[in-house]
Image (cartoon, rainbow, N blue to C red; front, side, top):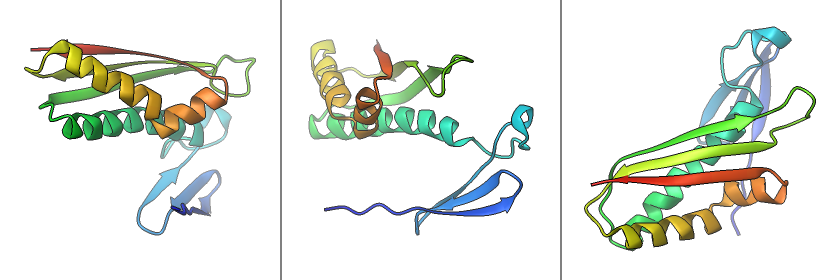
Length: 137
């Protein structure tokens, strides 16, 4: 079993240092809600985590399937309507270059989307996650 830890320490106003014992990041709120925008908000970090998870899991699956890829980029867009307490939907696009057959890359993509742990959290929360794959030769 893996145990994940986090400690948060207030720096000033809404700026917080978040640490997991190995890495730390500064969080803040945007200036329109009283913060100074000196770091991502917790919600921003959640969206960034989903994009990062998709990229990392796809890279891991591709390596296991011996798919050579380059120029991998994930662009994520999340919507939080003014009347909603959190994100209600996301759209992402994973772009890459590869000489591998499209069908093999699509199998890796399908496996990625079914196993991405952060994506599973979004799905369990009822957040609509729409992603597409773009392959360039």
